[in-house]
Every structure is written in structure tokens, then in C-alpha cells.
Image 1: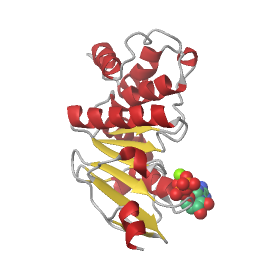
Image 2: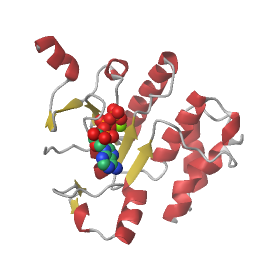
Image 3: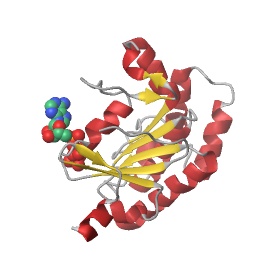
Length: 207
Ligand SMILES: Nc1ncnc2c1ncn2[C@@H]1O[C@H](COP(=O)(O)OP(=O)(O)OP(=O)(O)O)[C@@H](O)[C@H]1O
Ligand SMILES: [Mg+2]
């Protein structure tokens, strides 16, 4: 497969279980190295970076949102969101930026609570804020609504879309939940080891 993603694109990757969606996302996210082929991010061939460079590149250029929010339960919501900034060593306006993001994801009242004291939907919103705090080139999300009821899923989808518009972030989202996402810029379907630049919903109508 070969495809490129434009700045600001809100893109879904869909396909059946085991088709390789997470594997693909993990290669784009530099969590896995491809045995073959290349991944370019902002024009840089990431397959040429050594492990040390990869970690800092990942921290600075990429934001991650997973199925489970993976917040550190002993830290407050605000401290969780600040973590990627501390790792990046770009503390300057960190707290102000983190607070702004937490307001944008409607967690202003929860930001000083410990992460294990908030609901699943709130935790996922905090995870979105954490994924955006380093102003990443690309936000990668693997089943971000997979652990949420459908009402909360819809809220999370709308939140990701509004954050994408607001900050012109590129979003690449793996999901089983095609319907919940409604209108998106682009859908890539993985089937039988190949990537199709088409919507699974459309393919099913055609089949
Ligand atoms: N670390 C690994 N080592 C070997 N095989 C793996 C590894 N991780 C995944 N696989 C295999 O690679 C294939 C793709 O897995 P992957 O997790 O990318 O699928 P997926 O599309 O994300 O599935 P799901 O929708 O269930 O999350 C599967 O056949 C899986 O068993
Ligand atoms: Mg997966």
C-alpha cells in the first residue's frame, strides 16, 4: 500500500478485525518499524532515524489517542495533559496551553481532579487534550470510541472534528465505528492486505 495524507486532513482507516489497521497506525506512529517500505513525515524519511531520534520525533510531531485513555491515575487531569510537554522539555507556556485545551474539551471543572475520579468519557476527552498538547503534525487515534457508549462516542467524534478544524491538525483514526464519524475528508479501507482509498460503506453498497 502507498498513500499520502494532507495537512489538516481528517482521515479514517477502516477494515475488518485483523486486517492490519493497528499495525499500519503503529508504523505511521513510529511505534513499530516496517520490515519493508518507508514512512515520511513532514518530508523526513523516518525509517532512517535511530531509536533516540525516533523517540523525540514521536514526542514532538505525533499525538496519540488510544481506545483506553491510559491516564496516570495518581496524577490530576491537568498533570496528565502536561506530561508530553514535560517530556518534550517545552515547558514555557505549557500550563497555559494545557488549561486552554482542557477548557476546549470542556474539562475546566475536572482539571484538578485525580484522573481516576472522572468518567470514561471525561478521561477520553482528557486523552484528546493530552494528544494535542505538543501541537503535533499528526494525531493518531486507534479506536478512540471503542470503549464508549454511543452517546459519548458521538460527543468524542464531534470533539475530535472540532479540534481538527480549530487547530488544523491532521487526524488519522482507526475505527470500527464508521457510522459515528459521519462526514470525514477521507476513508482508507484495508482489505486482503491492500489499502483502498474508498469508503467501506460505499463498497458495501456497490457489492
Ligand atoms: N506483534 C505481532 N506479531 C505478529 N503478528 C501480529 C502482531 N501484532 C498483530 N499481528 C497480526 O497482524 C495482523 C494484523 O493485526 P492488527 O492488530 O494490525 O489488526 P487490526 O486491523 O488492528 O485488528 P482489530 O480491528 O481487531 O484491532 C493480525 O493477523 C495479527 O494477528
Ligand atoms: Mg486494532
